[in-house]
Image (tube, rainbow, N blue to C red; front, side, top):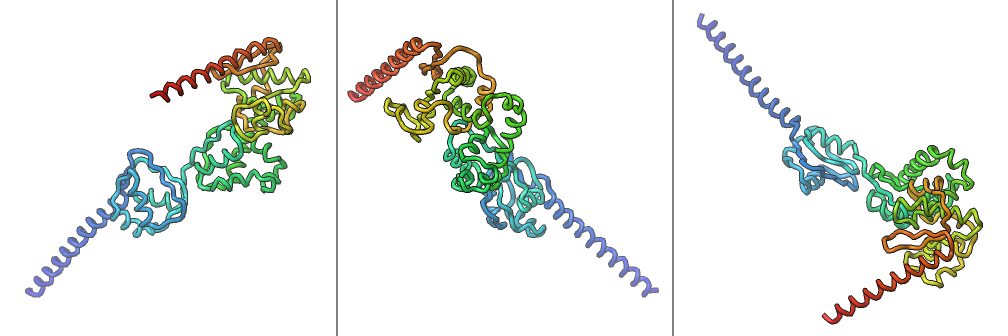
Length: 357
């Protein structure tokens, strides 16, 4: 009997031990699971952008996270990352905002699930400025972007364009592109967008125009450089169309600036430069575009304002005075020169007064 009682007692103690063990294990497991899967293990109240320029390890990632406005426990992150096997993280641009579990953030970075970068292309620039801008906005170097526009580049050879003609198709806009995209992929993306928004949508208007697409872009590029205000673009386009239709030279200052290779106030002798883009000396359009026109400039060439203007001169507001006859143009030009001279006089007077002080 005593032996039976001892056996029952031992069994009870064993089950008590098992029960305590299960309770402790459950508490430990639930605590660990709670820490691993906590929805606010990593918190970023505002958008934080992480740029990983190369594949990095866990310690480097923790250092980078620590420099941003992101709340997390470094030791716990290290423990969970090791536990889950996330030890290396991919090159890319990542937007971190809101609450994350450890697994959500670590897997995003480890698998290279990038967020798109907003990449802006401005109108009225040149290949060098575009390359520099893309080099600042994306991972690739500016020289790599410039190389895409070289005569020998694969894309130029494939499409059969001159560098200027391809560049004219770099439609100004803000694009959403992966930060790690190759330069050729980026340029091809913008080129495809040009085809979608210009070639495909305006195919009928281009087909009916007396100019082919390259010529349309050439005239649009001149309008782009000439017009400061959007509402003037159809007027300027109409003026150039009037000149083309009458067999007059375009005499567009932007083409002279392009020929000179520098943007500055033109002097009398600049207009005499012997260059195929100098529309003061050549008839018709120059050989190709001088910049990348935006959609408004392209539309202005396809849908010019109908009027009788043949001349224009700048005005103090940054726009133009449009005239029909050369005599009207001479009067407007004289007024512009008087205004310029007055600005020089005022500036000299201010410099003189500042010199006294």
